[in-house]
Image 1: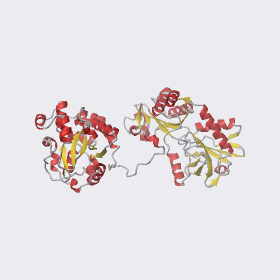
Image 2: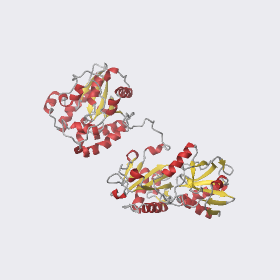
Image 3: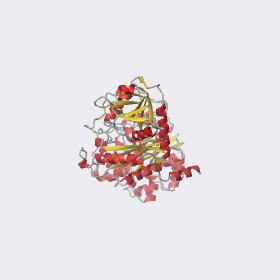
Image 4: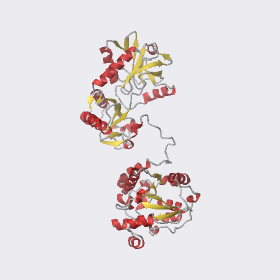
Length: 558
């Protein structure tokens, strides 16, 4: 006989699922065989406690060895377990043998009904123990399937077929229906808990709208919901109201699947890195940001980026801004926690912060700014050896009359509209013109050109005066080229000898074609290559050291 263990919190449709398995012709079911052992060990009170202890085995070791894994008459034995009933000291074979799966349900749906029989508490719900069960089984090398009760209600057959497939047992159509009323396998507590199940003849469809949630359980919900969400991430098929039907995409850099980000005042794992729906960046794109690169244990141009971020925050009249040293500490702690000391890009954001109520006015921002440090493994995003291709967008760059690009803000719709045009043209990026038709920049970078040995770049009237742009301008002079900053027409770029773009994320990226015109010889030009080499040397030699980097480097070499 093979034992199937179903672990769940209370009020999770676990009894309906037990009834479903009881309809199989090859399965016998046990209703919470560890219940009496749990009551005896914990002293937990129940209306039926004395009767239960007098009629049910409460020696945990005997329950596991003689009842759960005792002899049977059918091929499978389905054991319904409530997670909190897994006690310390039970025989190890409880978890190491048989097949296990976990049934979860949103605490929003559990809490309102639970206290009808027993007072609520975090321990009574057992979601913490349910996460522990999942973790323990994963460490044993047998990660359990996870089924969401919502899926059982919305698609009983599809969910049961998927579960049977995970358990490597055949699906039986009989699992979808049963006769109303109790079954012989019900525990003696059934009259207290199973009234709704006894009226059912199958998995009932969920109601279109939920009940009003009792606010007295709000604090308990806040404690439980993160644990539910931890498990829900591992459900294979989700069918909630707005769940995407898209296949989960692969990441450009798979190593970024498990990273840590700084949000607010703490470091959290990737899937927990979220801001409030009341945050200004959600309410109105009201935030400033910087892109930083890490080279060989140093943050390149850190002080310059922080200067610009604080200037942007001041221009937007942010209040309660964190100090420069606090921002640096958050950056360093995030990098060290991730072990990211090279080939790393940081998206550093500072939002106006959370609001007390939704609305545009900064007067609602009374919590202080929200700092976000998102560090990722990220090589330069463009082909800096073979070159990139650009088109000219119809979308014009914002005028300082409307929104000054010298404020490095998060409201990037102007750039995004141009990027959509480049995506539609299947090229790397789009050139954006100013209102007079002169080249301003691309949707993501500043731009340079070479003509007859002279290096030219557009004035920073409409474009962001980028830090990489300023660095390259210094290198141009240092390398004894003539530098000219002026209005440049699109046709001048079409007929340039060389063109490149500059940005923290992509460094110096040669442009080989614009609007179908081949630039120069269609490959990286000599001026571009010389400046790329000079830029690489600068990134190797300069930057703000990350504390403990050398220590981490020495440790990894031991």
